[in-house]
Length: 204
Ligand code: SF4
Image 1 (tube, rainbow, N blue to C red):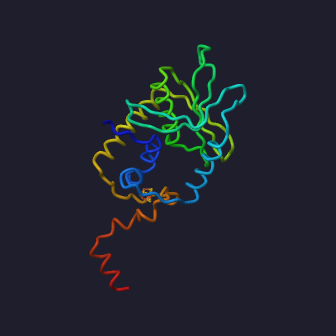
Image 2: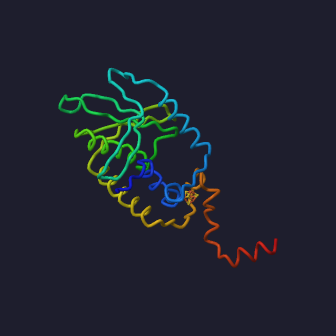
Image 3: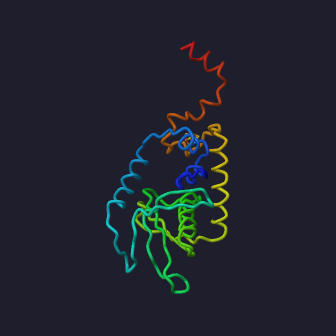
Protein backbone atom coordinates (compact mmCIF):
# COMPACT_ATOMS: atom_id res chain seq x y z
CA UNK A 1 0.00 0.00 0.00
CA UNK A 2 1.24 3.51 -0.84
CA UNK A 3 2.25 5.41 2.28
CA UNK A 4 0.71 8.87 2.38
CA UNK A 5 2.35 11.71 4.26
CA UNK A 6 0.72 14.98 5.35
CA UNK A 7 0.99 17.99 3.05
CA UNK A 8 2.30 19.99 6.04
CA UNK A 9 5.41 17.75 6.06
CA UNK A 10 6.59 19.52 2.87
CA UNK A 11 6.84 22.75 4.80
CA UNK A 12 8.61 21.03 7.69
CA UNK A 13 11.08 19.47 5.20
CA UNK A 14 11.89 22.81 3.56
CA UNK A 15 12.22 24.53 6.96
CA UNK A 16 14.60 21.86 8.28
CA UNK A 17 14.89 18.18 7.18
CA UNK A 18 15.91 17.21 10.73
CA UNK A 19 12.76 18.80 12.18
CA UNK A 20 10.70 17.02 9.51
CA UNK A 21 12.22 13.61 10.36
CA UNK A 22 11.76 14.17 14.10
CA UNK A 23 8.07 15.02 13.61
CA UNK A 24 7.08 12.53 10.89
CA UNK A 25 9.44 9.58 11.52
CA UNK A 26 10.12 9.83 15.27
CA UNK A 27 6.68 11.33 16.08
CA UNK A 28 8.22 14.05 18.29
CA UNK A 29 6.02 17.09 18.77
CA UNK A 30 6.46 19.99 21.18
CA UNK A 31 4.29 23.09 21.31
CA UNK A 32 5.74 26.57 21.47
CA UNK A 33 4.14 30.01 21.11
CA UNK A 34 4.22 29.82 17.31
CA UNK A 35 2.61 26.36 17.07
CA UNK A 36 -0.10 27.27 19.60
CA UNK A 37 -0.92 30.54 17.80
CA UNK A 38 -1.08 28.65 14.49
CA UNK A 39 -3.39 25.99 15.94
CA UNK A 40 -5.72 28.62 17.42
CA UNK A 41 -5.88 30.39 14.07
CA UNK A 42 -6.74 27.15 12.23
CA UNK A 43 -9.33 26.24 14.87
CA UNK A 44 -11.02 29.60 14.33
CA UNK A 45 -11.24 28.87 10.58
CA UNK A 46 -12.47 25.29 11.24
CA UNK A 47 -15.22 26.47 13.59
CA UNK A 48 -16.72 28.83 11.05
CA UNK A 49 -19.52 27.65 8.80
CA UNK A 50 -19.47 27.12 5.08
CA UNK A 51 -20.04 30.59 3.68
CA UNK A 52 -19.36 33.22 1.11
CA UNK A 53 -16.64 35.85 0.70
CA UNK A 54 -16.93 38.69 -1.79
CA UNK A 55 -19.36 36.65 -3.86
CA UNK A 56 -17.32 33.40 -3.76
CA UNK A 57 -18.71 30.17 -2.26
CA UNK A 58 -16.40 28.74 0.42
CA UNK A 59 -15.88 25.22 1.76
CA UNK A 60 -13.94 24.96 5.03
CA UNK A 61 -11.60 22.18 6.20
CA UNK A 62 -11.65 20.32 2.88
CA UNK A 63 -10.01 16.85 2.94
CA UNK A 64 -7.29 16.42 0.30
CA UNK A 65 -5.45 13.48 -1.21
CA UNK A 66 -2.98 12.87 -4.03
CA UNK A 67 -1.89 9.35 -5.03
CA UNK A 68 0.69 10.87 -7.38
CA UNK A 69 2.40 12.94 -4.69
CA UNK A 70 1.52 10.39 -1.95
CA UNK A 71 0.17 13.20 0.22
CA UNK A 72 -2.98 13.89 2.18
CA UNK A 73 -4.16 16.91 4.14
CA UNK A 74 -6.87 19.42 4.82
CA UNK A 75 -7.31 22.75 3.04
CA UNK A 76 -8.37 25.51 5.44
CA UNK A 77 -10.65 27.05 2.83
CA UNK A 78 -11.50 26.26 -0.79
CA UNK A 79 -13.38 29.00 -2.59
CA UNK A 80 -15.14 28.52 -5.92
CA UNK A 81 -14.22 31.39 -8.26
CA UNK A 82 -14.41 32.08 -12.00
CA UNK A 83 -11.30 30.73 -13.78
CA UNK A 84 -9.41 32.33 -16.72
CA UNK A 85 -11.94 30.90 -19.21
CA UNK A 86 -14.95 31.96 -17.09
CA UNK A 87 -15.64 28.44 -15.77
CA UNK A 88 -15.65 27.96 -11.99
CA UNK A 89 -12.46 26.62 -10.44
CA UNK A 90 -11.38 25.78 -6.86
CA UNK A 91 -9.22 28.44 -5.15
CA UNK A 92 -7.43 27.15 -2.01
CA UNK A 93 -6.72 29.59 0.83
CA UNK A 94 -4.32 28.75 3.66
CA UNK A 95 -4.24 30.66 6.97
CA UNK A 96 -0.88 31.44 8.61
CA UNK A 97 -0.31 33.17 11.92
CA UNK A 98 2.91 35.00 11.00
CA UNK A 99 4.30 37.19 8.28
CA UNK A 100 4.85 36.42 4.55
CA UNK A 101 8.11 34.51 4.05
CA UNK A 102 10.78 35.20 1.47
CA UNK A 103 11.38 31.49 0.95
CA UNK A 104 8.79 29.23 -0.71
CA UNK A 105 7.75 27.07 2.30
CA UNK A 106 4.14 28.33 2.52
CA UNK A 107 3.71 28.59 -1.25
CA UNK A 108 4.85 24.97 -1.65
CA UNK A 109 2.28 23.81 0.92
CA UNK A 110 -0.51 25.72 -0.84
CA UNK A 111 0.52 24.54 -4.31
CA UNK A 112 0.53 20.93 -3.04
CA UNK A 113 -3.08 21.49 -1.95
CA UNK A 114 -3.86 22.75 -5.46
CA UNK A 115 -2.26 19.66 -7.03
CA UNK A 116 -4.38 17.45 -4.73
CA UNK A 117 -7.54 19.30 -5.82
CA UNK A 118 -6.57 18.98 -9.49
CA UNK A 119 -6.07 15.22 -9.13
CA UNK A 120 -9.25 14.72 -7.06
CA UNK A 121 -11.55 16.88 -9.19
CA UNK A 122 -9.93 16.67 -12.65
CA UNK A 123 -9.86 20.46 -13.02
CA UNK A 124 -7.15 23.07 -13.34
CA UNK A 125 -6.31 25.13 -10.24
CA UNK A 126 -4.22 28.08 -11.45
CA UNK A 127 -4.12 30.26 -8.32
CA UNK A 128 -4.72 30.42 -4.57
CA UNK A 129 -3.91 32.67 -1.61
CA UNK A 130 -2.25 32.67 1.81
CA UNK A 131 -3.82 34.81 4.51
CA UNK A 132 -1.16 36.07 6.92
CA UNK A 133 -2.03 37.16 10.46
CA UNK A 134 0.69 39.86 10.42
CA UNK A 135 -0.25 41.92 8.54
CA UNK A 136 -3.80 40.69 8.12
CA UNK A 137 -3.82 40.33 4.36
CA UNK A 138 -3.85 37.83 1.56
CA UNK A 139 -0.91 37.01 -0.66
CA UNK A 140 -2.01 35.67 -4.05
CA UNK A 141 0.03 32.66 -5.23
CA UNK A 142 0.35 31.76 -8.91
CA UNK A 143 0.82 27.98 -9.26
CA UNK A 144 3.36 28.32 -12.06
CA UNK A 145 5.54 25.57 -13.54
CA UNK A 146 8.52 26.36 -11.30
CA UNK A 147 6.46 26.10 -8.11
CA UNK A 148 4.78 22.86 -9.27
CA UNK A 149 8.19 21.29 -10.00
CA UNK A 150 9.42 22.37 -6.55
CA UNK A 151 6.39 20.69 -4.93
CA UNK A 152 7.00 17.43 -6.81
CA UNK A 153 10.74 17.40 -6.04
CA UNK A 154 10.14 18.22 -2.37
CA UNK A 155 7.52 15.45 -2.09
CA UNK A 156 10.01 12.94 -3.57
CA UNK A 157 12.79 14.01 -1.20
CA UNK A 158 10.37 13.91 1.74
CA UNK A 159 9.26 10.33 0.99
CA UNK A 160 12.89 9.26 0.53
CA UNK A 161 13.84 10.73 3.91
CA UNK A 162 10.99 9.00 5.73
CA UNK A 163 11.50 5.68 3.88
CA UNK A 164 15.16 5.65 4.89
CA UNK A 165 14.17 6.33 8.53
CA UNK A 166 17.13 8.72 8.62
CA UNK A 167 17.44 11.64 11.05
CA UNK A 168 19.70 14.29 9.45
CA UNK A 169 22.34 15.92 11.65
CA UNK A 170 21.44 19.20 13.35
CA UNK A 171 22.72 22.31 11.61
CA UNK A 172 22.58 25.25 13.98
CA UNK A 173 20.99 28.23 12.28
CA UNK A 174 18.98 31.33 13.20
CA UNK A 175 15.78 29.42 12.33
CA UNK A 176 16.49 27.18 15.37
CA UNK A 177 15.34 30.11 17.53
CA UNK A 178 11.74 29.67 16.32
CA UNK A 179 11.84 25.85 16.18
CA UNK A 180 9.55 24.15 18.71
CA UNK A 181 11.87 21.12 18.74
CA UNK A 182 15.04 23.00 19.71
CA UNK A 183 14.92 21.45 23.21
CA UNK A 184 14.77 17.90 21.81
CA UNK A 185 17.13 18.53 18.91
CA UNK A 186 19.80 20.47 20.84
CA UNK A 187 21.46 21.99 17.76
CA UNK A 188 25.17 22.53 18.32
CA UNK A 189 25.44 19.89 21.05
CA UNK A 190 25.54 17.10 18.45
CA UNK A 191 28.73 18.54 17.01
CA UNK A 192 30.65 18.24 20.27
CA UNK A 193 32.72 15.08 20.58
CA UNK A 194 31.29 12.69 23.21
CA UNK A 195 34.68 12.45 24.94
CA UNK A 196 35.02 16.22 25.43
CA UNK A 197 31.39 16.44 26.55
CA UNK A 198 31.96 13.77 29.23
CA UNK A 199 35.20 15.41 30.36
CA UNK A 200 33.55 18.82 30.78
CA UNK A 201 30.58 17.19 32.56
CA UNK A 202 32.97 15.43 34.97
CA UNK A 203 34.81 18.70 35.67
CA UNK A 204 31.48 20.26 36.67
S1 SF4 B 1 16.51 23.17 16.36
FE1 SF4 B 1 17.32 23.78 14.38
S2 SF4 B 1 18.41 21.96 13.56
FE2 SF4 B 1 17.08 21.30 15.24
S3 SF4 B 1 15.22 20.62 14.25
FE3 SF4 B 1 14.90 22.74 14.85
S4 SF4 B 1 15.51 23.96 13.08
FE4 SF4 B 1 16.30 21.89 12.78
